[in-house]
Amino acid sequence: MNTREPPTRDLPDARARGPRTEYARLTASQHEITRAEADYQRFRAAYLEVARNEPGHEVALAMIGADMDRAHARLQALMGLPRLPFTHEPSTVVRREALRYSEESS
Image (tube, rainbow, N blue to C red):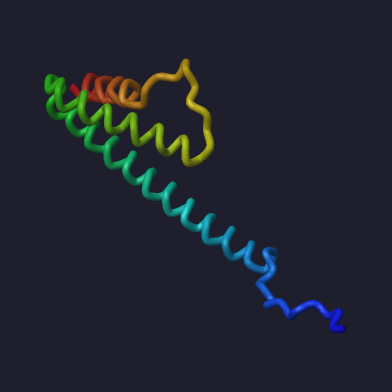
């Protein structure tokens, strides 16, 4: 009578695979954060340009501002920051800065 267990394939240990998987996830997360930061900065620069050069162009400011607010919210979510209800939308803050800058330079 054979009491030996049948040979099993040696599967890679989960601990051996874990650090590589974790590193890949961390690297992908860093790339996503970098991309989200670049998107936010691009929208912010476009918003500032329109606010400084054409302050009366409300439609452009609203559209770019909405995109900038979404990019900022995505960046915060990727970084793990909670969305606080009492903070101003980034577009509102940037618009105030642009108006202040245009008044100072006039």
